Image 1 (cartoon, helix red, strand yellow):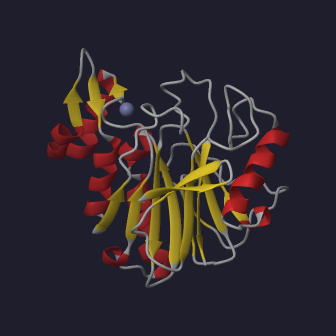
Image 2: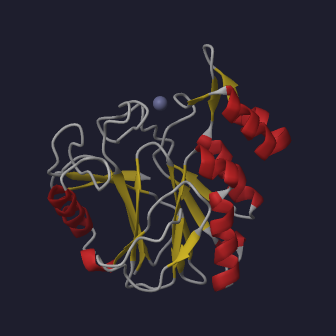
Length: 259
Ligand SMILES: [Zn+2]
């Protein structure tokens, strides 16, 4: 995994997602938005000016030579719905509510937005399918990434053992404090594995979203899993963090496309 630069824009790429694919997790550097969204904000529901968001999106996509008209994105709602994308989403058509997107169409660029929640990228180089998922604590407890892998099997005949998965920058186990209500739900969802996902902090429990999503992928039969290990709350110079910036921040984008 490594950081790349294109002009002012700095982005992150995984090593292990395989060939026939282009992808990027964009840092917040290099866009046109002012504070508190500075600078490459791709979120259109966080109070930033929509013209600036559109310009940021154009700048980000240009780094990988992807056409803004090729984008398929969704309204991320912390659920488990998986969207099967077959054509770009036109600006006139409403967003589908979903937290994972899959496609086998090389003309499409799948895009999602993040500020602490976990970006999970998926690639089946055999069936030639790309996917991206979004999981905060709710999506992790409900197994969004499990449903994404299951949909790859159902719709495209993927064998989980062929799938290459990557867990992107998101709030790390050092920073992700959760209340007793969430602790109980982690215990209910993960059973005997819960103790390895929770650690005691100063008066709080911490929940390891990276380990939890790794476990969900392993349970779904995925063997190739790369974890960025980059904490958004530790590095707000690079990433937006909803927690660390107390909700006043933007959203960084992640894109994946078959080529
Ligand atoms: Zn941290």
